[in-house]
Amino acid sequence: MYGYAPYMGYGSGYGMGQVKFQVEPKTAEVLINGAYAGTILSLKKSMWLDAGAYNLCIKSAGHPDYCRRIYVLSGKNLSVMAKLAPVPVEVKP
Image 1 (tube, rainbow, N blue to C red):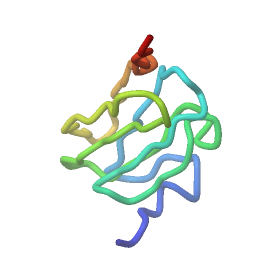
Image 2 (tube, rainbow, N blue to C red):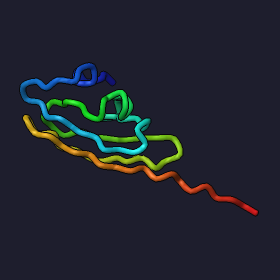
Image 3 (cartoon, one colour):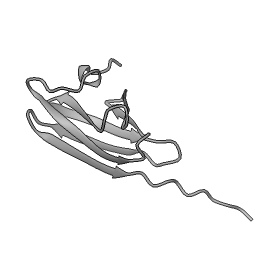
Image 4 (cartoon, helix red, strand yellow):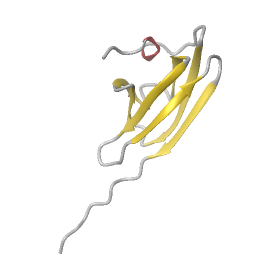
């Protein structure tokens, strides 16, 4: 898959909306429609996308994935809040 132009820049454009992330851990990876967009840190907690519907997944090793369908509106902000809790490790006696 090809990445989206907003992944390379941090500015808005005509017909775009901003997706703001409040996610723990900050090292979690962001995928848009299956394409790697970066980590929460590398994206500086936000990104701009063309208006439309997207499949968003936030992944971090040892944590359950956070996947949602998001709808970005032109000129609007969308906040994504997720705290990925570690997957419990089963300890056998």
